[in-house]
Image (cartoon, rainbow, N blue to C red; front, side, top):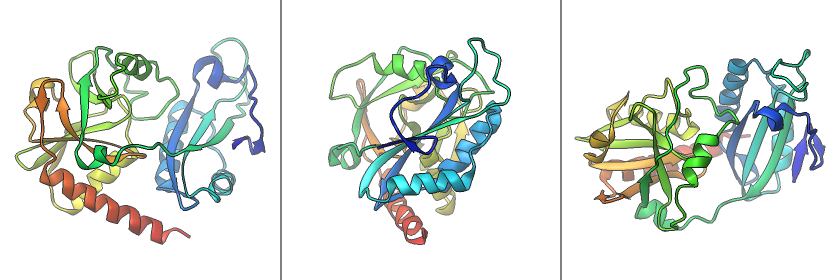
Length: 277
């Protein structure tokens, strides 16, 4: 089912700037037992992105009502929420006034093997590099050509994720995930001030680490530092946490901190679900 500006339809204006220029933002949200998981956090990130791009923020009550209406009959699914700047002229100049387009679409939940979570996944380094732009870093804008080109680099079904570096050889993120590595009982994740996405799950993991007094640092690091890790794991809002057991010719165990975080995350999600109205 798809809702476009609250109406059940499948067509969008060809003049919409989301189609014309990728002028918009999106959120990918897990739906469980008829409700969007961590919706408040997704809404906060969406609002941050709208403010950064100077797109009027959708009315939160209206958007929330539409989201919950769309999700109410789904046991488990994926909700994609898109907000664009709406329709405008041919050039880059913004329309005046701006009338945003909001699109909600519900999709089947991916059937990932349980082994990805329990035994870990294989990953590779991508040749495609991320550009640097502090204005766009962190937000989930619709211009994702770098990730599309990176994901096109492999078809081997044994590899579940690609690791992306920036143009200065710093490791930033996966094509669809944020990255963490463990070294000497401390956790490190990439500094995302110039590239990358502030993932919802990334933020939750950092809260869990803080609550459990596990040292966490956001920093820039290179391949050599990354490959010297004791443990590596990736995260996003749909998969939660997956350990990484292999990157090309380097191998890693599914270590105790990764397992601890997986357990803590399950409790965190259960508590969040229990507190939802």
